[in-house]
Image (tube, rainbow, N blue to C red):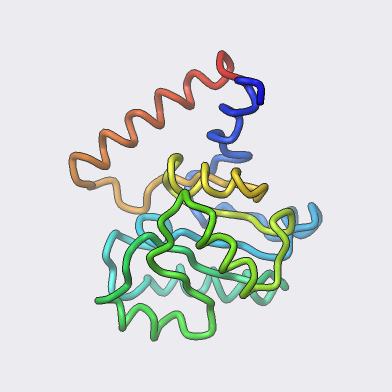
Amino acid sequence: MRRSARFARLFPDEELASIFELDPSRLKAAGKRGIIFDLDNTLGPRGAQELDGAVLELLDRLRAKGLLIGILSNDEGLTRGGLRAGLEGYPIYFDARKPRRQGFRQLLREMALKPEEAVMVGDNLFTDIWGAKRLGLYAILVSPFDPREPFHIRLVRLAARMILSLRRLLV
Protein backbone atom coordinates (compact mmCIF):
# COMPACT_ATOMS: atom_id res chain seq x y z
CA MET A 1 0.00 0.00 0.00
CA ARG A 2 1.32 3.42 -0.92
CA ARG A 3 2.20 5.75 1.93
CA SER A 4 -0.39 8.32 0.85
CA ALA A 5 -3.15 5.67 0.84
CA ARG A 6 -2.27 4.65 4.39
CA PHE A 7 -2.42 8.23 5.62
CA ALA A 8 -5.65 8.93 3.75
CA ARG A 9 -7.47 6.58 6.14
CA LEU A 10 -6.74 9.02 8.95
CA PHE A 11 -8.53 11.93 7.31
CA PRO A 12 -12.24 12.60 7.53
CA ASP A 13 -14.29 13.02 4.38
CA GLU A 14 -15.87 16.05 5.98
CA GLU A 15 -15.43 18.26 9.07
CA LEU A 16 -18.35 19.98 10.83
CA ALA A 17 -18.54 22.21 13.88
CA SER A 18 -21.38 20.12 15.32
CA ILE A 19 -23.82 17.31 14.67
CA PHE A 20 -26.48 19.95 14.05
CA GLU A 21 -24.77 20.84 10.75
CA LEU A 22 -25.50 17.41 9.22
CA ASP A 23 -27.42 17.63 5.94
CA PRO A 24 -29.58 14.51 5.64
CA SER A 25 -30.79 15.37 2.12
CA ARG A 26 -27.23 15.60 0.82
CA LEU A 27 -26.24 12.36 2.54
CA LYS A 28 -29.23 10.52 1.11
CA ALA A 29 -28.53 11.92 -2.37
CA ALA A 30 -25.02 10.44 -2.03
CA GLY A 31 -26.53 6.99 -1.41
CA LYS A 32 -26.15 6.96 2.37
CA ARG A 33 -28.89 5.06 4.21
CA GLY A 34 -27.64 5.26 7.79
CA ILE A 35 -25.62 7.27 10.27
CA ILE A 36 -23.56 5.78 13.07
CA PHE A 37 -22.80 8.22 15.85
CA ASP A 38 -20.08 8.08 18.45
CA LEU A 39 -21.60 8.74 21.88
CA ASP A 40 -19.24 10.49 24.28
CA ASN A 41 -18.38 14.04 23.29
CA THR A 42 -20.23 13.66 19.98
CA LEU A 43 -23.86 13.35 21.09
CA GLY A 44 -23.30 14.61 24.62
CA PRO A 45 -20.72 15.12 27.34
CA ARG A 46 -18.48 12.22 28.30
CA GLY A 47 -20.29 9.85 30.66
CA ALA A 48 -23.70 11.53 30.30
CA GLN A 49 -26.64 9.62 31.73
CA GLU A 50 -29.05 11.24 29.29
CA LEU A 51 -28.86 13.28 26.12
CA ASP A 52 -30.04 16.83 25.62
CA GLY A 53 -33.53 17.22 24.17
CA ALA A 54 -32.16 18.97 21.07
CA VAL A 55 -29.90 15.98 20.35
CA LEU A 56 -32.80 13.53 20.71
CA GLU A 57 -34.89 15.73 18.41
CA LEU A 58 -32.08 15.70 15.84
CA LEU A 59 -31.91 11.90 15.94
CA ASP A 60 -35.68 11.70 15.50
CA ARG A 61 -35.58 14.19 12.57
CA LEU A 62 -32.84 12.21 10.85
CA ARG A 63 -34.84 9.01 11.27
CA ALA A 64 -37.97 10.76 9.97
CA LYS A 65 -35.96 11.70 6.85
CA GLY A 66 -35.46 7.98 6.24
CA LEU A 67 -32.00 7.48 7.69
CA LEU A 68 -31.19 4.57 9.98
CA ILE A 69 -29.47 5.69 13.19
CA GLY A 70 -27.06 3.69 15.33
CA ILE A 71 -24.65 4.48 18.16
CA LEU A 72 -21.17 3.03 18.60
CA SER A 73 -19.27 3.71 21.82
CA ASN A 74 -16.00 2.64 23.38
CA ASP A 75 -17.59 3.12 26.82
CA GLU A 76 -18.47 -0.17 28.50
CA GLY A 77 -21.99 1.10 29.11
CA LEU A 78 -22.25 -0.55 32.52
CA THR A 79 -23.51 2.58 34.29
CA ARG A 80 -25.50 4.04 31.39
CA GLY A 81 -28.95 2.54 32.05
CA GLY A 82 -30.72 5.90 31.90
CA LEU A 83 -29.03 6.71 28.63
CA ARG A 84 -30.05 3.36 27.14
CA ALA A 85 -33.66 3.99 28.14
CA GLY A 86 -33.62 7.42 26.49
CA LEU A 87 -32.27 5.92 23.29
CA GLU A 88 -34.67 3.00 23.14
CA GLY A 89 -35.34 2.11 19.53
CA TYR A 90 -31.83 2.99 18.38
CA PRO A 91 -29.28 0.20 18.13
CA ILE A 92 -26.38 0.85 20.50
CA TYR A 93 -23.12 -1.07 20.59
CA PHE A 94 -21.01 -0.43 23.70
CA ASP A 95 -17.41 -1.51 24.34
CA ALA A 96 -16.71 -1.23 20.60
CA ARG A 97 -12.94 -0.85 21.02
CA LYS A 98 -12.72 1.53 18.08
CA PRO A 99 -10.76 1.72 15.81
CA ARG A 100 -11.09 -2.06 15.69
CA ARG A 101 -13.48 -3.24 13.00
CA GLN A 102 -15.62 -5.63 15.07
CA GLY A 103 -17.97 -3.03 16.60
CA PHE A 104 -18.47 -1.27 13.30
CA ARG A 105 -19.26 -4.57 11.57
CA GLN A 106 -21.66 -5.66 14.29
CA LEU A 107 -23.62 -2.42 14.15
CA LEU A 108 -23.65 -2.42 10.34
CA ARG A 109 -25.11 -5.96 10.41
CA GLU A 110 -27.73 -4.96 12.97
CA MET A 111 -28.69 -1.95 10.83
CA ALA A 112 -28.58 -4.04 7.60
CA LEU A 113 -26.14 -1.58 6.00
CA LYS A 114 -23.18 -2.05 3.71
CA PRO A 115 -20.15 0.09 4.64
CA GLU A 116 -20.59 2.31 1.58
CA GLU A 117 -24.18 3.07 2.69
CA ALA A 118 -23.12 4.30 6.13
CA VAL A 119 -21.76 7.50 7.61
CA MET A 120 -19.74 7.62 10.83
CA VAL A 121 -19.98 10.83 12.85
CA GLY A 122 -17.50 11.25 15.69
CA ASP A 123 -15.19 13.63 17.51
CA ASN A 124 -12.02 11.51 17.58
CA LEU A 125 -9.69 11.19 14.61
CA PHE A 126 -7.91 8.09 15.93
CA THR A 127 -10.93 6.03 16.95
CA ASP A 128 -14.05 7.19 15.10
CA ILE A 129 -12.59 8.41 11.81
CA TRP A 130 -9.74 5.94 11.40
CA GLY A 131 -11.98 3.02 12.37
CA ALA A 132 -14.69 4.07 9.93
CA LYS A 133 -12.29 4.67 7.06
CA ARG A 134 -10.69 1.24 7.56
CA LEU A 135 -14.05 -0.28 6.56
CA GLY A 136 -14.95 2.18 3.83
CA LEU A 137 -17.53 4.27 5.68
CA TYR A 138 -17.94 7.96 4.90
CA ALA A 139 -16.46 9.70 7.94
CA ILE A 140 -17.45 13.06 9.42
CA LEU A 141 -15.33 14.62 12.16
CA VAL A 142 -17.21 16.99 14.48
CA SER A 143 -15.90 19.29 17.18
CA PRO A 144 -16.15 17.86 20.70
CA PHE A 145 -19.46 18.44 22.46
CA ASP A 146 -17.69 19.58 25.63
CA PRO A 147 -14.24 21.21 25.32
CA ARG A 148 -13.39 20.46 28.99
CA GLU A 149 -11.53 17.18 28.82
CA PRO A 150 -8.96 15.20 30.78
CA PHE A 151 -5.33 15.99 30.06
CA HIS A 152 -4.66 12.78 28.11
CA ILE A 153 -7.57 13.50 25.76
CA ARG A 154 -6.27 17.02 25.18
CA LEU A 155 -2.94 15.49 24.12
CA VAL A 156 -4.75 13.19 21.67
CA ARG A 157 -6.62 16.19 20.23
CA LEU A 158 -3.34 18.09 19.82
CA ALA A 159 -1.85 15.18 17.87
CA ALA A 160 -4.99 15.03 15.72
CA ARG A 161 -4.81 18.76 14.94
CA MET A 162 -1.15 18.36 13.96
CA ILE A 163 -1.95 15.49 11.61
CA LEU A 164 -4.88 17.35 10.07
CA SER A 165 -2.69 20.41 9.50
CA LEU A 166 -0.16 18.20 7.66
CA ARG A 167 -2.84 16.65 5.43
CA ARG A 168 -1.58 18.25 2.22
CA LEU A 169 1.93 16.90 2.79
CA LEU A 170 0.86 13.37 3.71
CA VAL A 171 -1.57 12.52 0.89
